[in-house]
Image (cartoon, rainbow, N blue to C red):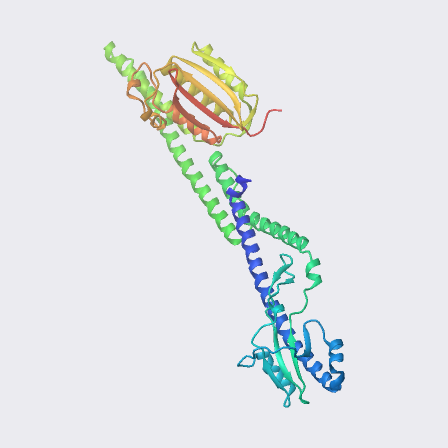
Length: 454
C-alpha cells in the first residue's frame, strides 16, 4: 500500500479522491444550508397564511364559543389562545408581525412580545447527508398580542414545527458508500489513464538502455503523449546513429592499423641488433594488443547480435573450463539455476575479461554464482593486493591503468573492465568493484532474470 501511494498513480488517485470528496462535502454542506433556508422561508410564508385563516375563522365564531373552537383548531407550531398573563412588549414590531398586519388589514392591533417562547431554543432533529443531527430552529418563533376587530384580545404563538420522523429513519450510509466507491473507481481510472503513458516512456527508456535497436514507441494517446513519443523515437534514432558512427570509426581505425603493424613486425625481424629488436618487438606487441582490445571495445558497443535464451550455469562452466585448460587457476562454485535473455558472444566476452583481469593481477580467480531476487549474482575474487578506494571508480574509464600495473609482464591496455561494464549494462546489469575484507579484489556482476528456467 505504501508503495502504491508513493507511485505517480497512487498520488494522482489520492489527490483526485480527496479533491472530489472534499468538494462534494463542501457542496453538500452549502446545499443543505440553502435548502434549510428555503424551507424556513417557505414555512414562514405558509405560517402567515395559516395564521390569517385561523384568525379569520376565529372571528366568525361567537365570542362565547371562541375558546372552545380554538382548542380544536390550534395545530402544532401554531396556537391562538387567551392571554393568561402579561408579558413585556417589544418596542418595535417584528418582521413577521409586520407582514401579518399587512395581510390582515385595518381593525387589528398587533404587538410583538419581547421574550421568545421556550420552545424556540429546544434542539430539533434534522435529516442531513451525514445522518440525523440536532439543530436549532432558525425560522419564525415568537409570540404576538393580537386585538381582534370586536375588541377581544388573544395571544398568537408561532412555534417550530415538530421534528421529522423521517429524519430519524433516513439512512444515508448506503448512498455514501456507493458514492465513495464510484469516486474511488473514477479516480483510479483517471490516474491510470494519466500515468500509463509515463510508464510506457519509462519502460521504453529502460529498454533503450538495454537495447539501442529496440522497436520505437507506438504513436498513440493524447496529442501531448504522441508528441513526447515522437521526440523519444527521434532521440533513439539519433543515439543509434551516433553509436554506429563511433563504433564504425573505432573499428575502422583499429582494423586498418593491423596491416601496417604486421608489415612493421616483419621488417623488425631484419634488425641485426638483438637487444634493440626485442625492445621494438615488445613495443609493437603492446601496440597490437591495444588494437585488438580496441576492436573488442568497438564490438562491446555493438548491439546487432541477436538476443536468445542462455543457460548461465553452462556459460560460466565453459568460460572457467577454458581458463583451466589454458593453465590458469580458476575455481567455480554455486549454481544460478536460471536462464537469461542475452547475447551469447557478448556475455562470454564480459565473463572472460573479468576472469582474465582477476588472474592477471591476482594470480588466481575464485568464481561464485548464486540466484537472488530477480537476478543472478556472479562474484569473482582474486588474490591480489586490491585497489585503492579512490581508484575503484576510475578503473572503468577507457585506457586507465593503475600505476603499479604498468608493466610488460602484466600487459593490458585498461579496456577490459570498460568492455565488461558496457556489455553488462546492455543486458540491464551492472559491474561493481570492492576490496574483500579477507584480501584481494572482488568483482560483482549482476544480470537480471528475464524468465526462470523451466
